[in-house]
Length: 271
Ligand code: ADP
Ligand code: MG
Image 1: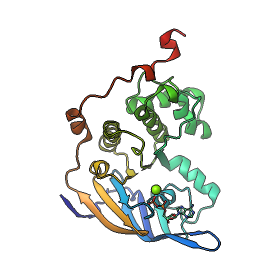
Image 2 (image 1 turned 60 degrees about the vertical axis):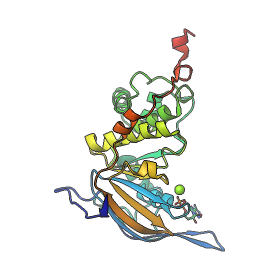
Image 3 (image 1 turned 120 degrees about the vertical axis):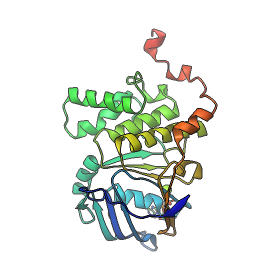
């Protein structure tokens, strides 16, 4: 069941995202690509939003602006109550490190680096000392269900486990919002639901605000709000009365295949 979104204010907290009349034009010299043509949207703390729409409709452009990776050509963007639409690149990078967690389709982990070191990385940049870094990275890995895998390298982990490491890394700075662009695009269907179970748990139990791009209805059904883009504009914005439960669906799916070899470390082999 879906209905028009009525924004529910959380008392005492500013909306996590307010965008008004957001435009983005890519200037390619001879041609200009008008990727966003006036997008207005408000997201409250604790929401989980799926962004859908055909390829080329502006989803990634929108996520890049929300993630402070790029600046709008026109329009206003307030992140956590702060106007970030006119900041310099340097200032944007600072905001990004403090407020945004990113998860990508391709995991983007450093290959010759253990899970815990990958997760610590944003804290290293933020100048947090070694002991605290390690403690928080262990906690973050525990949150995504990777206890005991802290010292595995990406090649020793399955795709789903690698994506969990990426989620743990995105969480380590306590971001105001977690942005995920096609996070299940490289994963099989059971593993995709497992990843959605992690997102759903973080949203419901830890009130993490999540914006997730997907083109699969099988994935968007886990969100509480679905925003559809078309030609650089929002075509529809609906709340979902009762989102599907990833935990429940997992319990009805055939069990995962054993990933034994893949996760066996040299140490475990005695080498
Ligand atoms: P989606 O993620 O929905 O597939 P995008 O935001 O990637 O859509 O792209 C929207 C439009 O902007 C497309 O026409 C795309 O070709 C164009 N575009 C995206 N990124 C760039 C860029 N860096 N330079 C030029 N054009 C771009
Ligand atoms: Mg895209």
